[in-house]
Length: 118
Image (cartoon, rainbow, N blue to C red; front, side, top):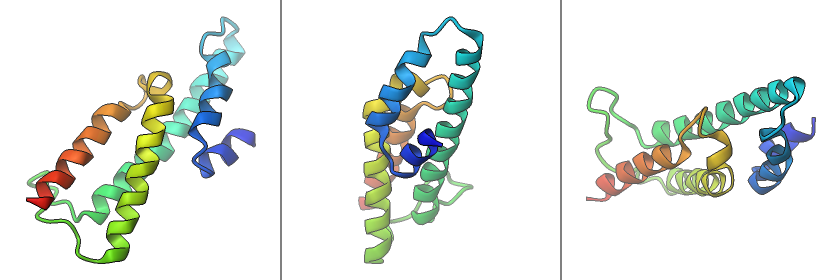
């Protein structure tokens, strides 16, 4: 499907352009399709958030991690995932906010990273 390929390619601008006409539709089928698309997008973005947390070795009991990983590949991976989330936030925040609060999640991850740098 076209949307899945855009999700896989992290084409958030394209996703926003694709979804915007459906977002305000009064047609019940289009509304249902829009909600289904949002579920798919939120699921994929949630996986990206979990990838970042996993890579930062988050201590689940303390809800924070001790330090940034020292492995260069892991740091690069986290950076790439944060870039994906920033782009998604910039393009999709208004459309997906009922399913996932990208701004809040992005800020939480940023705080975790900043705390790990101290």
